[in-house]
Length: 121
Image 1 (spheres, one colour):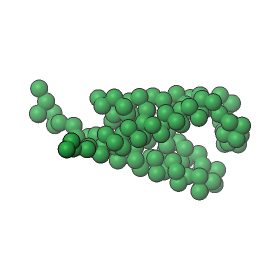
Image 2 (cartoon, helix red, strand yellow; image 1 turned 30 degrees about the vertical axis):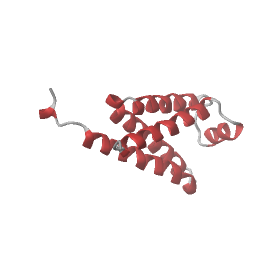
Image 3 (cartoon, helix red, strand yellow; image 1 turned 60 degrees about the vertical axis):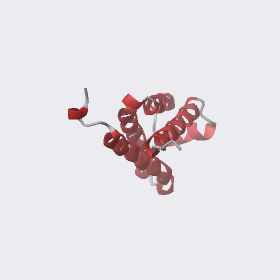
Image 4 (cartoon, rainbow, N blue to C red; image 1 turned 120 degrees about the horizontal axis):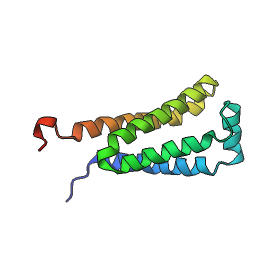
């Protein structure tokens, strides 16, 4: 039976989350656009968010870039947590905080699974 590496599973699930997020931020609903406006972001800011989420997803899928993808995803989620906390929407901070935690976990698992520099050839 093949061994399952949970770091890969988490990274792929995280990539799927960011792909869905990128799609949702590319084609925003009126409600999401109103959220961005309420938070004081420019009208087209959601495109930047979508791009960053898409890049995080791609990097998470590609094993050599996985650490960078998890770090980029962490920055995006940290910005989301910071935004809702700053605006007093504390319950809205829970989902991005959970995703931020998964990003950090993927980063840790990626570093731990990398061969040490002295063993590389």
